[in-house]
Image (cartoon, rainbow, N blue to C red; front, side):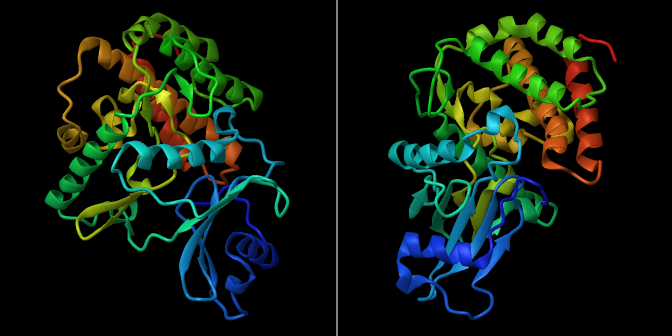
Length: 329
């Protein structure tokens, strides 16, 4: 996926990074193919690196400092590194180990880290090619993994790296306002008046008060961030958007309100979640509103050269607004 946030580096810089992480004896020779860009990500650039001894590792580099990102994406790699410490400490959900992380900005203008290369299939690339029973089995496993991640408790709502707040309502409304401010700053056309969106949020915000227990949420746990092999999930990747919040905001629940995102039945079964209550449906619709706002607005920040995501996401935003039964076009 192409994006101006991808911070590609020349071979000499990649070699310097490898030397710092693994030592000069592991810097690849001039043989071709030692560095290959992994293209499925939407935000960071990632490379498959073959070290001199043949070991395969992955290198992930944050966006360049000169590229404007959405407010919630600032310091995203620090969030991911925090998540990759938390998850193995508290769960059995498989995630990559961090071999080496560098936040000094001495070799390039951004944070980066190395981890093992995961020799497995990306579940997102398999979408549409799997028998229905196999697809459902993976979605059940993803539901169970998501539930396990949600068992991690925080001391406050908000970023993994802090600061936090005791009120989920305060944190979530701030999250939405940050996205709206990002959109207004770049004059992104939502198809809706920005204040109409704010009115919808305000009218339904009471539903957020039901959430009092801060839980780890991955939030970005779509099929594209799941690696599978031999019928099992072997790794969950890309944790830079995690925070402490309401588990109902997880990606697997989106389709309970917006069918364009798929069928949530197998995920819900794997998670072990009963049918949503009236208040939960309202919260989930607010979370759909937040998500679709991001999907529309980020297209401008990513520098997309076609309108496919923008057009699709604007339709989903309209669905979310309609479900919340407020606002005018």
